[in-house]
Image (spheres, rainbow, N blue to C red):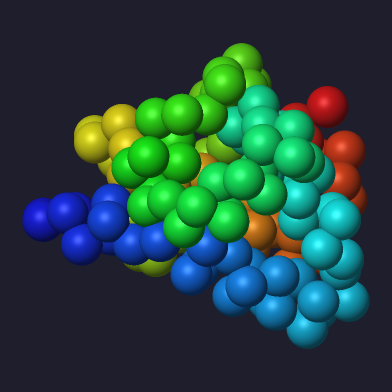
Length: 116
């Protein structure tokens, strides 16, 4: 599977779709930002800089301060693949993010999404 196209997608280009998905289901942009920051270690200002610079997913995750230590607890199927079985480390991180956004949109409690 060639993931180059996904890796080069702009995070800033996908972010509004994440926001729309969350808001359509009654969740907030703030909740979405909390999830992204929990996963990546970015603070709000750093994350906004990444969006403003229109970095791709590869750069977004490469520059992330630190993935949360509990990311291994993110399991399940997203886009037809089991997240925990995805071999490519970058694709796994992207799918972790997709899975968390999906859980938010499905109404899951924030404590459960953040693996508390």
